[in-house]
Image 1: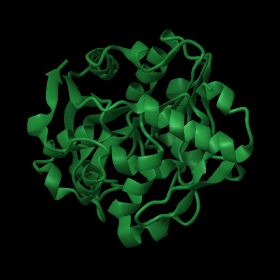
Image 2: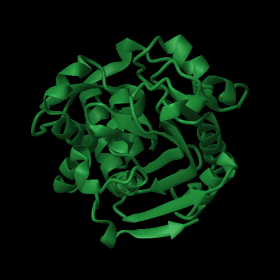
Image 3: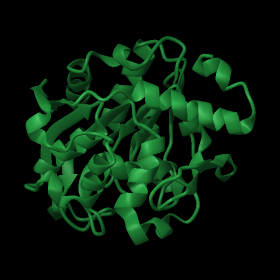
Length: 293
């Protein structure tokens, strides 16, 4: 039974089938593509092209979720949210690869209306046929059995669960609790419930969720990074412009490489370590092929 047929079953089977299909599609290649330059759309495209192009991930008729970080009421220059030009370039690439629909959303921390507007993402995607930017609808969270080491079950957003392709698009930035927030932590934007509860054992909780909700492609926006006072920021003094985009099928490898942009090692970030121990990807950069795109 293929994944599309399976999803026509019961509600419980819908979730299970979606997750099983996602695990099969996610892949495990430990290659990281790194592109640099002042044209953020161009470097985003180059990073994806180095991994085989968007057609290696998106097939004609697919529904794609692009999950940026737009959780904060901050303008792009403050490096609290994913850069809108990175998100738009990915949306354009998905459509060019034949995506039927591209959905963009985030479970924001600040007021969602202000976050969507002031992040610049809603405006950047305005008028794009086939692209849907909408706020989270709380009734669409579904309780999913995780059987994790810390989280046994959790509410996850059904549009993320049901997408043919899930593309994780975080910004690289400092975080007061986890030291950095990258791809693995960006998954919190599709979690419902009392997300503060996860802080009791954050790295294990994130490994639990990422073990079930796999990212097919992780594209880390390091065009400008927030080096302190994250995740919200608010001072340009904490922002460093790097003009870099990092992409990989392997979310752990992507996070591991992005960590070095802050002068740290992958082993310094508990979230990365927990995910690597769970077998979610490769954190040893000596075993990762890094391609300069």
